[in-house]
Amino acid sequence: MASLHVGSLGEFLREQRHTAQLSLRQLADAAGVSNPYLSQIERGLRKPSAEILQQLARALRISAETLYVRAGILDEKDQAGLEVRGAILADTSISEQQKQVLLQIYESFRKENGHTEDVRVSPGKNGENGDAPSSGTKPRSPRPGHDQEESS
Image (cartoon, rainbow, N blue to C red; front, side, top):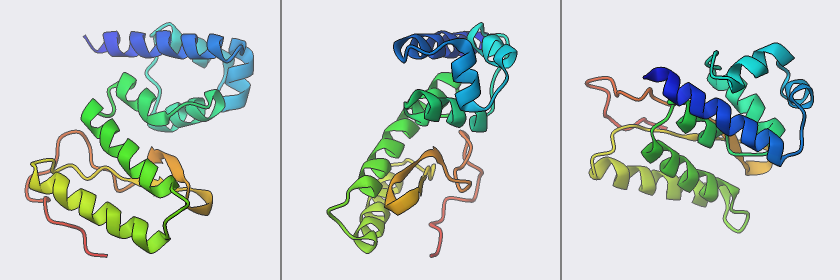
């Protein structure tokens, strides 16, 4: 029932739009999508790409990862990892080098505990966390033989 995920995504987007007190047209303009396309997403007729979800999240000022989970792009366990990484990257009290060390330690613990997927958050402006996984994000099912750590 793939449409169940899409439908719940659309319902969630509509709720968020109403909470933000935005019309369909206002959100479509802010996200850079057409009004009819956004309407189809909200009604569960279209499944948006990760890029469109990121644009919608920015316009609604919500986490893109939440939309990725609702759309079935990320598992909830991936969202938790993204939130941890995002918090580390957003912390202004530690240096960039300290952030990278913390992220490496966190990733090594995840791998040690059987989480082989390497989901990362792209650093944004001024070291803030980005709204979307970087292009280094692996798909939901890891590829066999690619569990080795990346060399920096």
